[in-house]
Structure formats: structure tokens, C-alpha cells
Length: 241
Image (cartoon, helix red, strand yellow):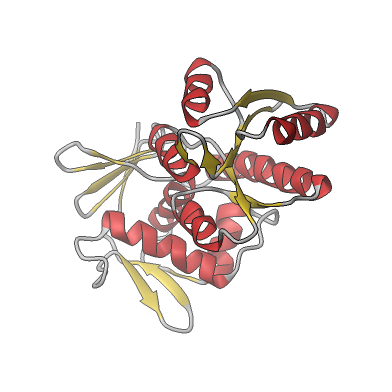
């Protein structure tokens, strides 16, 4: 039974979401502030968090960043209708989706189901990707440990990746020197439960480049093939247990 953490300083909204989720069969916990949210997350295991952007002790973007630095827990940000910039920043920080206030409960449930299904489907699909249950891959100055889901530099430092970034890098590492279209990347990442735009893939590639490329403006690993997609140009060596 999925366990959802609802983070919102408005008790009426928390109650509304609690009832909605519990009627669907989900377990629900609540937090009225960022501090409470981090306490709840440290004390228990959750499958998803809905996160209001405006909290009494800080903004939800900071909490989202803290969550993403510690785990790959799916995050759905809750934003006011006019908070377009915050919404974009939230997605750039690794949030999986967003809900706009005022919201429709049926839409909320649909989005929650999709994100939960997407998270499960991604884990299962990547488990079948070549090398996903083995040691991983090396390329350039990096080692991608697929068992620990970590990216480490030659010096041993861990580069923090969001779930989407890690999954994308795994797809690239398993298909070196192959041109992958955006549609192929979308299928490999999410299956049929996710329908992002081409721009979504471009933004994800841009974020990954900023983390793995010596110079993101002049990429040497993840190359753009204009009119076709992307090609991973690294010399990949597969590691086995």
C-alpha cells in the first residue's frame, strides 16, 4: 500500500487530500511545515510526497532540494495558479509533476497514480536494461554504479543525480555511439505512462550535461545530433560483479 506524505500549511487542504488518498486505499501522513516534513521523512518510509511551495518556515523549493539530495522519492509540487516560475524551478530541481491550486481531486488522483506507476515502471524497466543488475559502467572520468545507483568521479566523489537524470544516463551508457531519438529516450525512460514534450527531454539532457560534462556549453559526452536526437560519445566499459 503506497504511503504518501502531504506537506501543506493549510489544514483544510491537508484534510481534503488525506480523505481523497485514503479513499483510494493509500496510507497518508501529514506535515504542516518544512521542518515537520523532514522529520516525517527521516522517521518513516514514503512512496510519494505532495509538497506545497509556500510553507511557514521556508519555501517548498528548498525542501524539494533537500529531499532530492537525500533520496529519489517522487515529488509532486503544489503551486498557486500564478507561480509559473516556481513550477518550472521545481521541475528543474527534480520534481516529478505539479498540481495547480485550486485543484480538482480527480486530477490529483490521476497525477498521483501516474507518478507512482511511473516510478515502479521505471525501476522495473531499468532492471532489465543491459548491465542494470551488474557492476555498472565507466566512461571518461566517471563510474556509473547501477547497483548502488551512484555516479562517482575518479577521485571517488559522488555526483548527486535525480531519478530522471540517473535513468537517462543509464540509457545513454547502455547505448553508446548510437543516435537515440527523443521518442526512443522517452520510451526507455518512462514507457507509455509518461508523455512529455520534446522540450522536457531537452531540459533533462541540459541538466545532466551540467553535471557530467567538463564544459556543458561544449559537450563531449552527450552530443546533439540535429534533427535526430542525442548520441552518447563516451567510450563505455561495462563492469561486472
